[in-house]
Each structure stands twice: as C-alpha cells, then as structure tokens.
Amino acid sequence: MGSVAQPFKKPIPYEFKDSSLIDTRSLIGGQWVGAASGKTFKLTDPEDDGEICDIADLDGEDTRRAIEAASQAFETYKLTPHRERRWLMRKWGDLIKANREDLAALNTLELGMPYTESLAKVQYAVDFVDWFEGAVERTFGETIPAFRGSNRILTIRQPQGVVACITPWNSPLAMVTRKVGAAIAAGNTVVCKPAPETPLCAIALAKLFERAGGPPGVFNIVTTSPANTPAVGHQLCSHNAIRHLSFTGSTAVGKMLNTECAKTIKKTSLELGGLAPFIAFEDADVDKAVAGLITSKFRSSGQTCVCANRIYVHSSILDKFADALSEGVKKTFTYGSVWDKKVNFGPLYAGKGIAKVAAHLDDSLKNGAKVHSGGRDDRAGPNFFPPTVLKGGRVGMKFMEEETFGPLAFLVPFDTEEEVIKMANTADVGLAAYFYTEDISRLWRVSEALKVGMVGVRVGLVSAAEAPFGGVLESGLGREGGIAALEEYLDIKSITIGL
Ligand code: NAD
Image 1 (tube, protein in one colour):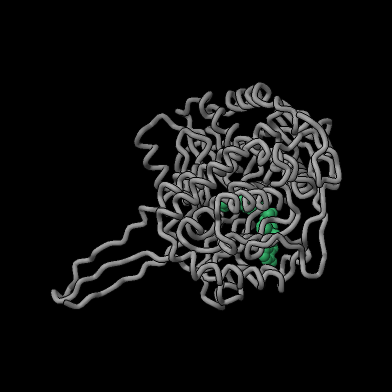
Image 2 (spheres, protein in one colour):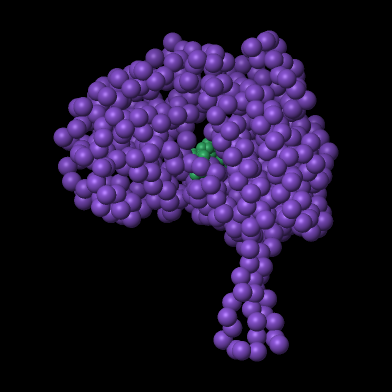
C-alpha cells in the first residue's frame, strides 16, 4: 500500500485510487455543503487517537433544510417507475463493488477495523443493495374477496415520504446500505445521520449514489458532532415531513427517539442492543460449536449487536470446550497494524470500548471467574484487547445483564435444557441467539422457545441481506434485510371499487 492521502491530517499507509470519494461536508438537495455556522468537529483515528480531519458540524436548522430538500425531491421521486429504481440500485451496487478497496480503507481508517475484515464488510454492505435491486419490482399488492359481491378490493404499496436514518459507529457501511438502500428502492427519500465517529463511509456511499444517477435530494447526509446530535435528532423526530425513523443504536437512545416520534405518529424501525445467548448442548459437535463461537463472539473484535454475550456450555463438555476455544482463538487471529493484510483482529473503538470491557472483566474476576486464556495486553496498541476466554461465569455478573461489546467470552456451565432456556430468556432484550446440538427435535424445540428475533442453529452468523434481521422485546421494532425490509418502507393502501 502507498502513502499519504488527502485531505487527511495524518499519513495513512494506503493510497486511494479515487480520492474524490473523500469529503468532509454534508449533502443537502444535491449540494455538498458545510454547516451554515461554519462549525466543524474533529474526526480521530481509533487505532492511535490521531486526528484524521475536520467534519462539517450541522445543527438543527441545517437539518431542517435537508428534510425540506428531501421532501421536495419526494414529490417527483415517488413517481419513478420501479424499473428505473431497479437500475439505480444496480448502478449504485456496481460502483460500490468497483470502489471496494477505497471503501474498505475508509472503514479501516475511521473504525479501526483490520483492512481484510473491512473488505468483507464492503461485500456485506453491497449485498443489501443487490438484494433490494432484485426485490424492488416484486412489491406486489393483493386482491381480496369482498363480503359484498358488488365490491372489488385490492391493495397497493406506496412509499411513505421522507425517511430519517440514524446509524451507529460500529458498522458504517452496511448500516447505511440496509436502511438507505431499502428506503430508496421502495421510492422514499432519505436524510441520513451517520454516527459522528464514522461519517466518511456514509459520505463515500452518497458520492457513489450520485454517480449512479441518484436524483438530487433523494439521499441527503447530515454530519454532526456529539454536541449537536440532540438538536439534529430533535429536528428529525419532530418535523412533520419525516414519516419514518429508522434507527440503529443503543436501547436507551432508541427509546428516547421513539417517544419523541410518537408525538407526530411516525413509523419507527428500531434495531437496538442485544445480549445474545450461545448454547453448546452436551450432544454438540464441539469443534463446530467452537468455530461458530469464534465467528459469533470475536468478529469485529466483539463489537456487534449480535455477538454472543452469555455463553452457556453443558457441564459435561465445559473443560474440553474451553481448551478447544482457547486453541481455536490462538490459531485464528493475527494481531498488528490494521493496515497489514495478514491482521484479522483489531483494536476496540477507543475509550468507549476499553472502559466497558475492563469493567466487565474486573467484575467477573472479583466474583470468582478465572481467565482461561488471553487477558489484558496492549502490546498491539492502547485500544487493543485480545480475545479472552473466562471460566466460572454466572448469573449476577455484569456481562449477564449488559452487552460487553468486546472480546470477552464468559463460559457459564449448565446441566439441563430447561435450565438453560430459562437463563437465556431472562433478558429484557431479544435480538440473536445461537445453539449447537445434533438432536433434530431439540433443534425445533429450542428454536421455538428462545425469545429472540433471530436464531442460529449450528452457525455463528445470522446476518445476511436476504434474511429478516431484527429483535423482539427491548431489542427493537421492525426488520431489516429480505422482503420484510422493503415492506417496512411501504404503506399498504386498500382500494375498494364498487361495480
Ligand atoms: P448510540 O445509541 O449511542 O448511537 C447510535 C446513533 O444514534 C449515533 O448516530 C448517535 O450519534 C445517534 N444519537 C445518539 N443520541 C442521539 C439523539 N439524542 N438524537 C439523535 N441521534 C442520536 O449507539 P452506539 O454506541 O453508536 O452504537 C452501539 C449500540 O448500537 C449497541 O448497543 C449495539 O448493540 C447497537 N447496535 C444495534 C444493531 C442492531 O441492528 N440491532 C446494530 C449495530 C449496533
């Protein structure tokens, strides 16, 4: 990889093929603009806390302009034939693929994710665009047999208007494509507010959307600092032109925004926190279960909402499982600079991550857990925390009640199916769950009993563009991915015709 790329303040070991994808401004009604106030905020590199660049810091008033631009664009975009929207998705997807290396580099730069892992994230992001491209022409209506013979009833599906998309820092590419892609494919226009920690990926995706021929005002971006975020959020939740808020982030913020949106009866799609149980039953294939857990627990250094958090292992296989897991981790991961293509395990997102992981580790050790492998080690950088396996996890420890969002695998022993289902179902949230068994009736029984939106049986990964993604309980409302994602952004209208 080459050297310094502009306009960054720090040198990075990657040379962009197309540096025009890099911008520090927002996009409103087809114009790349700064904040009306002229204010900016600093974007820092989570690998070493170095300053990357200054990003436009928009406020509530700037956001109102973006909403109005989106609202105006909706009046014409909603009439675009499905086939045209399909070609737009196809061109956008093709451009994302053609620029995969630069997009991966931006993901690595702002998220601190190893470059090789970032390339896989670009593929995951474009999978959504590809899926919506295929589905956009299949948003069929229905005909309904009427009670009264003189009537004929049918339904059509129509776009809703302007959709606000608020995305988290931990997945800066796919969180944009799965919200914005679905909303725009369905005929809506969008105001997207990326996380202040990771705006560059969203900006680059919007540039590619423009190049694909996306009309001005259809995809707007509002970048904002943590300080201005509440004002921007308030505008997005209270403006009447916004008809749908699609939010991914913490349960606390999701609840607050949902309450605000209720005042103008907006539809909300909320993808919130998880506390995923992972269960290895006594009849599990231990090698397969360990491989699945490594994927589920340690990808993105443990920083995804569907990462296993409470790992229940049958007492009869606990020792064997812990040894195999520690061995598997040693063989799987290579550490070092996130720009090194051999490296596949990166740092945590700066202070945010380290503090919580350290708190969960200390709490468990104080209450009797023991490190089986790993433990604190910042040789690969100040924000680095290695994959760590602990035995002796139990109810009452912090990781049982809140997401660790980091690479700590707490193993909790159990003895019966009934006991483990009860423990798995105690959480207030219900996003993903995983289990390993070779027993076909247990496969059905446990899948049906778990209180979650997604179950992985003998797999450690449930996220896929073609499958409905989302949770139950306080993990949120609605689904992303699959046909359910498009339906989320369409209103059903029934038309009754008298003969
Ligand atoms: P967060 O809730 O702090 O922030 C998420 C987004 O909301 C960011 O863009 C942030 O700027 C914005 N935000 C914060 N306060 C706001 C306000 N008052 N008004 C408007 N916007 C506001 O969460 P985070 O720390 O960025 O992300 C991590 C969380 O996201 C974890 O809990 C994780 O489980 C969850 N997550 C869920 C999914 C899912 O699909 N269920 C996916 C990824 C992450």
